Image (cartoon, rainbow, N blue to C red; front, side):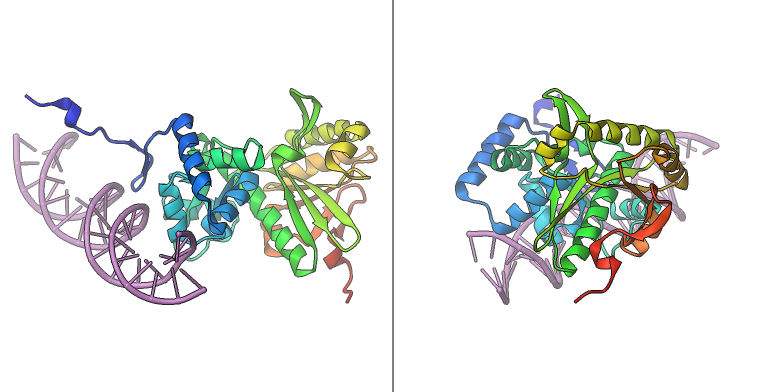
Length: 300
DNA sequence: TTACGCGATAATACGAATCG
DNA sequence: CGATTCGTATTATCGCGTAA
């Protein structure tokens, strides 16, 4: 005879080395409230705030050490995607991303972190990455890397980059129907001007989605009052499309031909990563250009 | 107090050896 | 011959100490 109630059932195994205990959002709220009451450290705030916009980020993009990130994970502030270092390295390699030295993990907001983000920002942070297939996760990892690369360059040249969350960048035709959901939006604040860019990243190897994207953007462009108000811009920002396969670029080219207004630039991911996204192909003009102000001419 | 590096430890994968 | 166990390398995690 054996008392089964005393046998501890295994937690859901995510992979060899990590498991998570389930946590209801009610429990998470209680924990979040406790932590908010006690006060959060600067480091925790920095990590959470970044993830609210980014959704997922690899260790080397988060402003805390690996050790601290694990501590945050234990507090359920963060969740770690269930892949081992070698697995992650393979994924990064497959997506042309540089493989860093040492351990490699990707973190997202954990249940407690989500509640804190809701409290602090009043926005619904991106969630659900633990359940996503890896391709979907890597799509966002890549998109984030692109934004952070460009933002880094911008800072080197005296611009103040502001990464607008997907949530804030989305245009709504009416409160329930999104009209346009850019993958990312970046504002560069200069001394007396502000440059704004929209981003799309394509994992797929077909041209159809690119064509539909252009249609979508053109539709959004026609709703001038909407985007002027939502984005606080005078002119519709240029669309910067990054793709793994050149065929996607051909889709953009076809769709842009014979259409005016929407400015679209493109690059393949692998080549763009090598030179930090300085040159882009301008589909409207049919030529390579230095899109960002620091590439155009050497001043100062 | 908080962050985090380091060393110890526990958990796991995997190939080899052994069993039935 | 397939299944199970064993041995070992790998590596995630934890506790402690130090520094900011």
